Length: 257
Image (cartoon, rainbow, N blue to C red; front, side, top):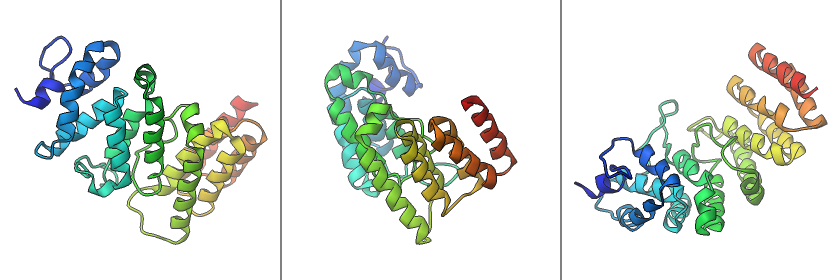
């Protein structure tokens, strides 16, 4: 049995499994997961081990609220394309690295971090990731991923990431993925905390780039940005969106009425 199969290929009843997610998320109900932490730290930091196994060890440690996992996420975010596992997982739609999206998933849940006293490190890891939102691909996760308290802690980082992203769009830089939609997703998340700011962020993006996909994602702000800002934004989308967008906006405005 390899070190990896022992740590993440064996469930907490001691049975072999191919469902690594079942092991990772099973830790929430199994205090015995702590016994596997030292081995996972060694695996993650061992350059002789396969990159995919090191990456999954990092995902497990971050999901489990472990200091070593959060610190590894921060290190990866500091030099993304030189991370050992960069490009091992590639998104089918855009053919770009998708490991940071998976790390964001791992950092998003704070239950074990609260229990282990590592919440501050979790927020730092989340901030490190969101600073990459203008340069690395996060699938469609950034609009839904983080709780309000985490979003509030990294609001300045989100603003800066959106600013950089908009500047890239204005400059006409070549994009490797759908950056406008990713920025709108961030604006959508912010709009729950601050409707006017979220709408302002989204409008800055849409004034530069407003593909059907980006407009479709922007509809979420109509419901999230409570008050006049949400309605005004919805009315704007009615003028620029296709029939699908307009139908969704009308539905959202109806719910808000």
